Length: 327
Image 1 (spheres, rainbow, N blue to C red):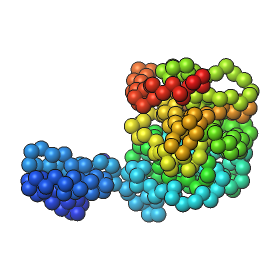
Image 2 (cartoon, rainbow, N blue to C red):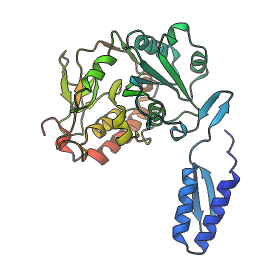
Image 3 (cartoon, rainbow, N blue to C red):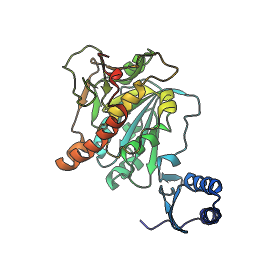
Image 4 (tube, helix red, strand yellow):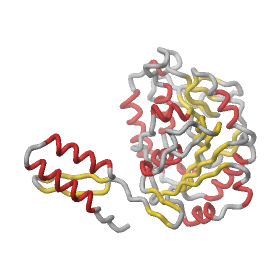
């Protein structure tokens, strides 16, 4: 990918900032740095000299399609009132058959007026072709939008790009390894009618110390858990607007679901004293197929990335025993 040219207006801001630094006008220099960074550039100082680097890739227009360089470039609907009950967000990368299976299982079973947002996250040529020329059954009667990225973003950034286009009052993040055998979206929305519930899904995790997490014993009953796994994870769009976005340091998917569950449950000033709940809906009929994001990597690489993500959970929540079920 060639280096993006530096726009004249960015160079002008950098020159004015350099002049302010030479004059020791630090307030002006800091304000100009903020303008540069807001425009998607970073400035690296070296004495009286500086270097400009693009901090996020520039968007690219191809006819009517915009390929976004970052999640921040995606026009957000979060300031608009919700206009549909549900938005399901899927990320498409390298496995078109997996995406097709997930889309068919959702569109054939989800409630009416379910919006589907597919993030074409630097997709493979095969995946891109499938998205550009979908089979008739893929479109069904749903409100479907495809968000294209210029390059492959990290997992959290790709999800942020999709969530920002959500029109549903409830957002469901669903992995393409999941195949619902009945409507699982409607029951998750119903569970979130309870204001004490922050996040729901068919698969939960429990922990006694916020350092080790495991799935509870199998059962058909709904149960309170510490976190909801990211195979299918539902939460209120309004909560994302106030507590999000997802931390884009989570470039790998693993453990982001735990972090986000805890963020959603974490009591805020307007909440009651106790954390809100995560509820695993044990009655939902779902098949979990091979998770390509896990099996496509070598064991040492996926372990390294998983541990790096888990340190982010520990940094924020390691001492928060109030988030455990027995607190």
